[in-house]
Image (tube, rainbow, N blue to C red; front, side, top):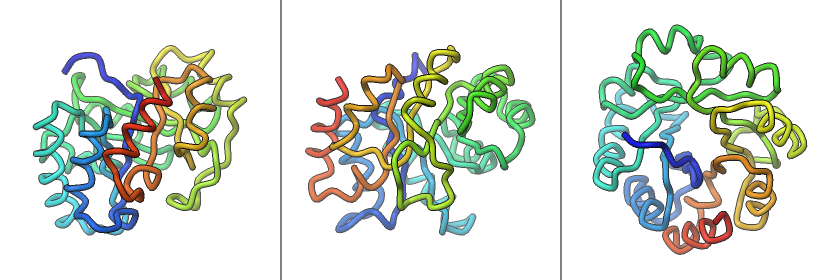
Length: 206
């Protein structure tokens, strides 16, 4: 796959979707301008997660949008996703790289400059930094700040994606930091018109 566009980064949560299936919602979001999709379904068991991943991979492949699987390296391999996103408490990045090989994307959550530097040294392809604003989709997320986001961006050479409570009303604050993308869940999936809302968000970002 060519250079990855992390700008409009969709993280899934079936609970955020109102009147569509998750697959329908993801497709609408991609049509609106989502550039990368992370499948994060915390409440699904392994079998359900695998079946959801297959459906979402069909859609992302159709539009040539990278699919990132949250945490589950095994499922990422089974559905041939473009990569995984792991947290600080998950499988160590170095071990994940051994399993996935050199060509898969590995994203890493980082809440501090030290974590970001370590992640870059160990071979992460990008970092997810947050939570920048209060968020209801990840209640255990560490609070972060735009100032820290800027500090990390200035010191790190790999792409940075901001996450946490980002929506159409504050995404301009994120775009002004110079980071490479903004990750969103309910701001996109919870909207009445997913395609239109995503397009509006993208217009602000660019």
